[in-house]
Image (cartoon, rainbow over all chains, first blue to last red; front, side, top):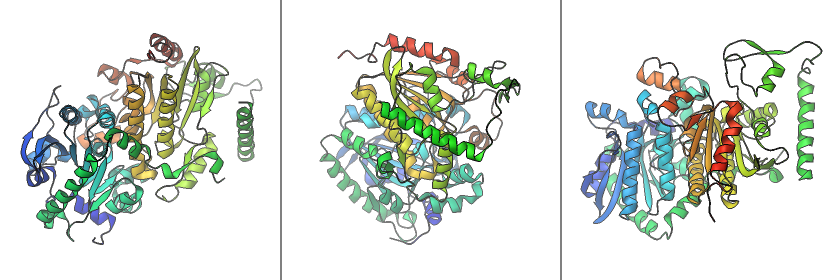
Length: 273
Length: 293
């Protein structure tokens, strides 16, 4: 794997030419049928999802979409979903459960959209329901973090049985800018934040959040997308056969997320005073 | 049980010694009234009045934050408080510079080990599990220990077939624990989900402020969701939203009353009516929170 600083990886994860959910869908899947709308009030293009075949097998695919042209970027809020997007995702997940399809999610967002209407329509509630729903689904979920994984807006699609990250993808509690702004009241210290946040794929593997890291070409996924598609195809095939072997995917996820950070817990008896 | 009280008493005494070693003892009520300004309207209010009104301003109705132990002592039936996982903490998972020192300082000033206190007890005779977050401890932020205590509270309620009440107050995820703080959203949401699938009643009470990762996980999953008047409740903070949309936010945006109007709350309940309201909801759901078996 390439030697890059965390800040460089953040830049690569945000590279405009980097393959996004739409490109992975086109390269890896066939017969994609897009499902649109939350059946409540709107369709948020920042979430792209539907049914497709992966090597002939029906799966539900859900991912963040940033858009390619400026018009698309604006319509998608640069990949930052509104509550309608998360409610569409919930609808698709329920359909996957009904028709017993595995769910494959692609994570690529700076975070949920922080707008007035988004708050008025319950951004927090929409994300919370995604988490509760994913914890109860009995079909397997495989998550691929392909670019930016920012905050609750990323996690809302990322409670996978398997969480796979591309080498230059990042995944963090908040964007480095937001992190610096909250902790140091200075968003210009984002570079510094990158160094302390432990947000690279290797860090997350170490912390037990990611299960696998897929290497990228030296200068990033956008320099040779075909190679990345081949690697992701292989990883996804392996992950599917692995999750097929899990007898109770919901229980498996429960144990996985229940254990997050458990090795740092201290009880009074063992505490150092 | 007695041992537990002895431990707690010992700890309080230690804290008292530490406190009085550093700051001069507070002015005693020697005839003179001690006043504290209301953060809402700026009027001076006698300290005894603050205590009597459960820290609600008698002039403007501003609700000041309540500490975890204080809130529990005001609500639970006397003598029924049994703390759960009182000393549970987490180490510094990212080796974040300065985090250990900040944690120790927060523990010294609040006398709490973490930003949430969970307990078993009784409310108007009905046994339940109650957890109270404290915004004065690290802004009530959720790290590994807070997430674990919430999840364990839900587990205790599920196994004991007890209703669960959580008072939320949080600035969001704890930045210093990075991605592992984010994962606590998944951990708590799934624990609440499992509890509810088992038939348990979960009442979420949102107090000032409830934001970020707590709003986007267990705070928004209540069977019944209540809030205190004027509480700020939202996912993104007002400052971030103003920056994004480039304009000032309307008066009352993200306040409890605004959320009630938008369909996200069952009620906005003033503090002096909270106990009665909770009791009524608990009774309506039966002892075990609606379970038949």
